[in-house]
Amino acid sequence: MIKSLIAIFTLIFFQTIFPQINDYSIKYGIQGHLLIPNTEFKNDAYILSLFGRGFLKYEIAPSLETEFGIGIANLAGEDKVKDKWETYLIPADLRFSFSPFTSEVYSPYLYGGIGLLRWNVVKLPKDEVNKKSGWNSAIPIGAGVEFKLSSDVILDISGGYNFTSTDY
Image 1 (cartoon, rainbow, N blue to C red):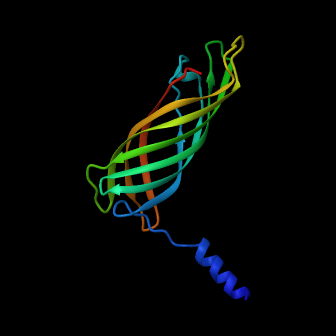
Image 2: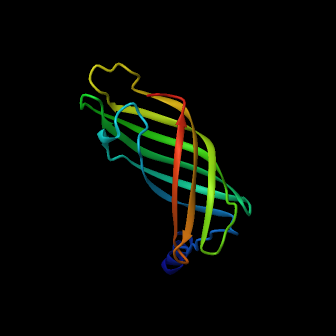
Image 3: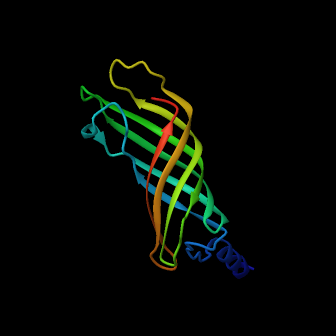
């Protein structure tokens, strides 16, 4: 009985997933990003800001896929008088990706979508009386390229921008 349970557990939770740049139905994974703020403060006042995101992709057609993702980020920096500001972000979005061509080794793509952004200001600069948290719409756009590194790993290099409906 125990051997059967171990075999079932192994089959359910430890499946080999082969990366496919094209000709797949579903892809999933995690992403790590560096955030670069586009604020009224100077870029040299930037403090390292990280963003982690999980995603699930579905192939609609050979050159078109849709993706749902949700993540968590910390955006931080210093204002003009060296006071630290910091905001936590939780974005969720639906993206569409277009790949003009693919090969067995790499696949460039463009993406765009729509989403929601939950933000929570952790530390405001002194004398600021802005809202502390809220929800806003977001429009992610960008481009990237996927490289097949092995039968189990894809490296996805991308750059993007998120337009939001707030200045907070």
